Length: 376
Image 1 (tube, rainbow, N blue to C red):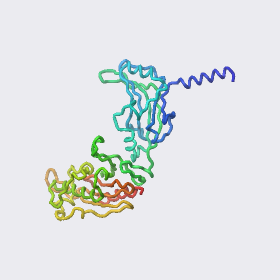
Image 2: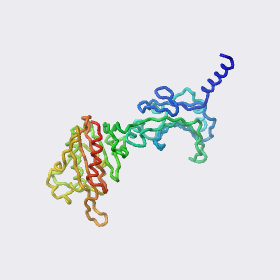
Image 3: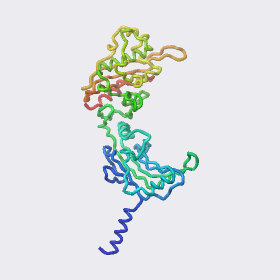
Image 4: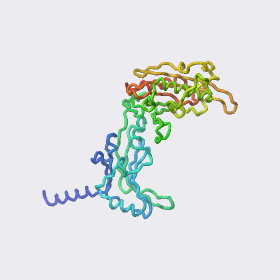
C-alpha cells in the first residue's frame, strides 16, 4: 500500500472513531439508527455518547433520554438521565468516557416517572397505534431563563431511533388474560383496565374495549388468589352483588350474601356506583325475583372448552328531578366462563352499567365475537 493511501485510510479511520454520536446497544451489540429489533431484547438496551456540542448553559440542565412513540409518532413515555447545574453538566458531558454504556431499563442509571418497561409493552398489546413502537434516543440541554422557566432545548447530538414490532393481528397475546386471540374482527383498541392502584395487591387488571358508547370489560380472576373460587362461585358473587346494588343494600334473607368471601371488585369493574342499575334483580321492577334463587337468572353458556354462565338485563334509573323510575335506559350482559388453557383462571366479559342505545343483541354479538376469537 502506498504511503498516501495509508495516510488517507488512517485519516478516515480516525474520523470514523472520533465523530460525535449517540450509540445504542442491544445484547451488547451496536444497533444502527433505523434498525428493527425484537421486543424480547429491548430490556438489554444500553446507550452511550461521545463528543457532544460544547454548549453548557451556566444554569439549567442536560437530559439524556430514551423516548417511546406510537406509529403516529405520538408520545407514549420516556426514560431519562438528568444533570442539573453547570458543574454537574460539565462533568457529565465532558468527562463521560465514550466507552461508557448506560443501562436504560436495568439498574439505576435512568429514571422514569411512569410505569416499568414490561407494563408499557404489555399495555401496547391490542392498541392499533402501538403495533410498532418507535424508540428515540437523544441528548439535549435547556438554559434556565427565570425562576423555573427554561429556554428552548438545544440538541447536543443528532438523535437516533429504531423500531420495535409489538404485536400481530392474528396472534395477539393478552398477558392479563393469559390468552392469545385473533383480533381480525375486533377493530377497536384493546386497552388495559384496572380496578385500583398497581401498588394495591387487591387490584385486578384486565382489558376494555369501547364501541358505540358501550365499554366492554374482560377480566381473568385467579383461583390461587381467591381460595375456593370457581365459575359457580364467581357467578354467585356477581348476581348477589348487583342484587344488593339494585335494592339499596336491602335484600330478602334468601338473598343475603357474605361479600368478604372473595372481595371481587365488581363496583369498580362494572361502575355500579353510577345512576343506572340492573332491573332484573330489582324488587320493584321485577317483583318475582324476591322469592327465587338468583342463580336461576343465569343461562348456561359454552364456547368450545369455555363453559359457564351468561346473564342479561335491561337497566333502569331514577330521575333526579322528578323521582320517576325509567326502565330500559340501557342493556347489560355478562359471561362467566372457565379458562380454555389455564386452570387457575376464570374469565369474565361484561359491559359497564351505563345508559346507552345499544340493544341486548348488540352487546351479545360483540362479546361473542371476542370469545370466538380466543385460540383454544
